[in-house]
Image 1 (tube, helix red, strand yellow):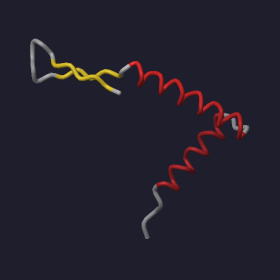
Image 2 (cartoon, rainbow, N blue to C red):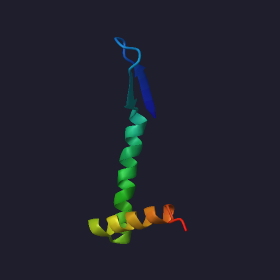
Image 3 (cartoon, rainbow, N blue to C red):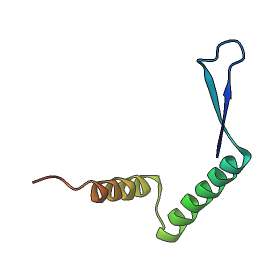
Image 4 (cartoon, rainbow, N blue to C red):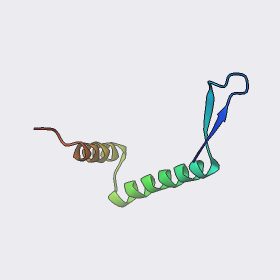
Length: 63
């Protein structure tokens, strides 16, 4: 998913890049996002509201 390459002039530095497979997954994820929006018939504001609600469900308030 990522490549790590040490800097030849300074071995303390490491360059991290996405692989082609990672870029392909990103394309698929963006397509799924559009499919969810279309299936739910949401505009941008509705999608933001849904995202906020799902994030809140994933992090319930402590009592």
